[in-house]
Length: 355
Image 1 (tube, rainbow, N blue to C red):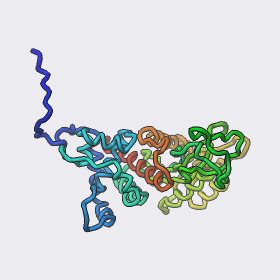
Image 2: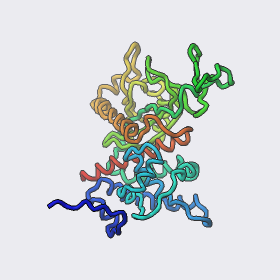
Image 3: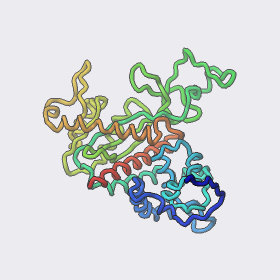
Image 4: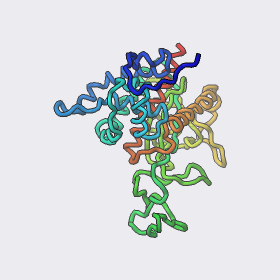
């Protein structure tokens, strides 16, 4: 017997969002971890808000919603708020009731300086690491960097002294034959972005450079770092991250051929770190000699170091960092660290499910 297509505009619901989400949903273990971390961070949040005045949107809810934006690749905060209007799964994860009103998307912009900053992101990142320690190696690491395209166009890359051809009709800028360098030019929309070429023959883009330190056992990110895009940025950032590795035992640090320089290898050895960087023998002699390359551990590091590309791929495709939609090194740095924490949460959920 065919049922009737009755459409009812209003109704009462006696099922909570908690009961609607399946018990085996992959967001459930992440929600438990996030709730524990945000509860620990509550005293830090308390210091950011006044004791009087109108209550604000809970910082815990803002951070949970931004995690959802990363997990589900929601490309804008306007679309995130739209999802929170009718998506029961999103409402459950954020902690909202069925009939509760949703805040305006401008709340995120207003909280950039107070809540959505590098300090809070780093605190969240470190607390995720504390829960991941049973799955991490403390001896073998990999370092690498990746370009993050800035939210700025070539048209905005103008001479610093104000010279140059004026924009034409429609705002078009003709820069043919003009030598454009970071020393003489900068973007008018994002001055922190730098014109950089990934490889010989590729297109130069206004970019930032993101760096990570990964442990080799399960591919968890140990540190994140964002810098301007320069030729030495990868090695300089790698040295800063290597210095933060706890001393006391000899460790290995893997990397690609870009790190195979005499200065970098010498500095690592001075820090009691064995350089397991890939040998660059193209028209030159590698700084990594056979004393290191002959060991089986060196070959293992060369295999393991490629896993860092999985984190970059996830952060760029799922976390939408291929072309970042924020401007300024501080804001982009916050997003890079927070996306790294989201990646670790996904990895941690999978690792916990296996045990």
